[in-house]
Image 1: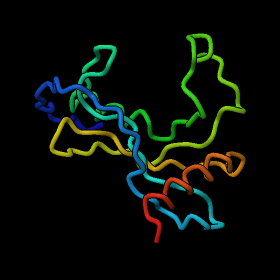
Image 2 (image 1 turned 90 degrees about the horizontal axis):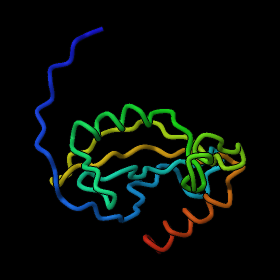
Image 3 (image 1 turned 60 degrees about the vertical axis):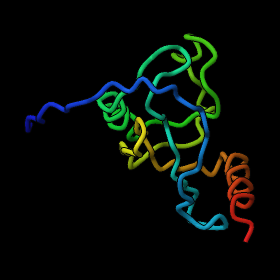
Image 4 (image 1 turned 90 degrees about the vertical axis):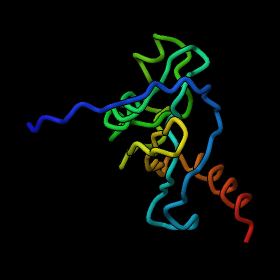
Length: 134
């Protein structure tokens, strides 16, 4: 395994602003080939619970999120986190990457939504239609 040079990071103390966004619609919304959309997983900075996500943390998150399952909701408890139902899985993440955006950075990934979660895709489709009503 190749040694990676140490990453020089500057702590980013900026307050995280939670602002859900669809970064890029990757497939035509009416596509029969599946449903994929580019999303922001996490933004860098200080979270409401006091954690600071700097560049090094975001790069690690990008590596960890690759292939991870996407759930309809956050786990409500530690028990939920350990024992998630297969019915809650709506898709998976791929092509995760750290993005240096001039602020504290962020992690974007492609969210592939399963056919069984078509209800979610209809919400995303409507959001995209509102953002680009052409």
